Amino acid sequence: MANLKYGNYLQLEKIVSAQSLESEKRGKIAHDEMLFIITHQVYELWFKQILFELDSIIEIFASDVLDDKKIGAANSRLERIVTIQRVLVHQVDVIETMTPLDFMEFRDLLVPASGFQSLQFKKIEIGLGLKKHARIPADQDFFRTRLNDAEREELEDAESKPSLLERLEIWLTRIPFLEFGNFDFWSEYRSAALRMFSKEKQIIESNSDLSEHEKGFQVAALDGTSRAFEELLDKNDPQRFESAGHFRMNQRAVLAALFINLYRDEPILFLPFRLLTNLVEIDELWTTWRQRHAIMVQRMLGTRIGTGGSSGHDYLKKTTERNRIFSDFFNLSSYLIPRSELPELPDSIRRQLGFYFGV
Ligand code: HEM
Image 1 (cartoon, rainbow, N blue to C red):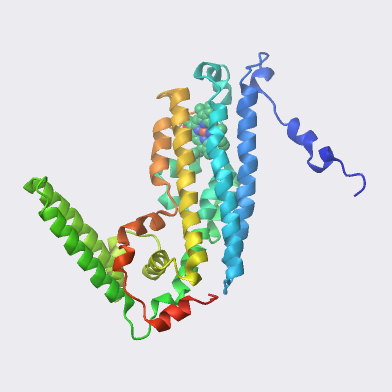
Image 2 (tube, helix red, strand yellow; image 1 turned 90 degrees about the vertical axis):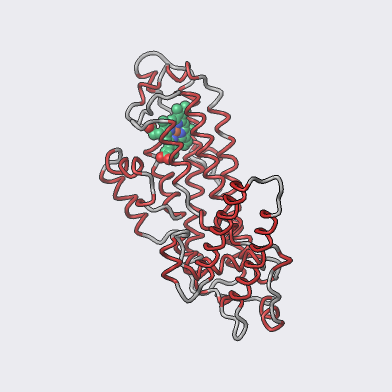
């Protein structure tokens, strides 16, 4: 369009006139309220971009056949989200140029509005895979008490659609690397793990710096890890795996993710491994943002309650610890063994791993 102008295209008139200071309406401008509004608006714009990428990634995983090109596209978009998240974490620096005393100039005017009512933030959590029942009780309560019917419905609608975690679980479940013909990979892996545990036990028992009590404690911890290995690797007893409750995903999906981690150097597993790494990165950065926000809130409010009525810093500390999404991929690290101990794969399987696949 010949008449297209920078300002029209970006609809700047709307954007730059969208800052309406509550303090000004009451007759006395609080200087830092402008920064407070603009910082939140910038966050919301980035949330919009994250949701745009996330929806398209979930769509990619809806496909019954996922070839390398599609995994490549999903990875590039996940990496874009990761890069935006780094910016989101750093942006806390900007709001921290406001002092607690300056915040007090307008804070009371904001009640009962709260960041908790950011629908886009909640939609990102939901899209990634955080379910309502997995949220901390106060967070579940706020869905009922701090949102209106339309907002609640919007979030319930988002939750009724498959999340990225659910789509990933389906994809991992159908990955064919768990069937190896006559070669029983998982019992080989189990034997290698048991050898590793018995070496570790010897190291503990021969460590003269440890008291008998400390040795007993460390051996008990090692036995716990060894039991968790058995629960995961026993493919004939999925019930045992489920009742152990270490993972959100099903056993087959977890084993596929473990295999991808272990044999990431095989060409066929490069892209799936990058994908799993990106998910870990997203969870870590989301948690890092929560930590930074929680500490910033403590700096601003001390132990006061939030404008939304939560316990403030304490509530945010709890959502930081508990509202995690891809914890399964973090937990996998407990089930790794060193490369040097990995079972040697038969040639026929190595050949399969050298080629393109589409599942
Ligand atoms: C002076 C700056 C800020 C203060 C004092 C503050 C304070 C709080 C408090 C106390 C809560 C807990 C809910 C409540 O009781 O209101 C909260 C939640 C939240 N805030 Fe902030 N906030 C600030 C800046 C920001 C910024 C810049 C964002 C960016 C979007 C943001 C996003 C959120 C979100 C998404 C939640 C919900 C988190 C959850 O439920 O896990 N906040 N904030």
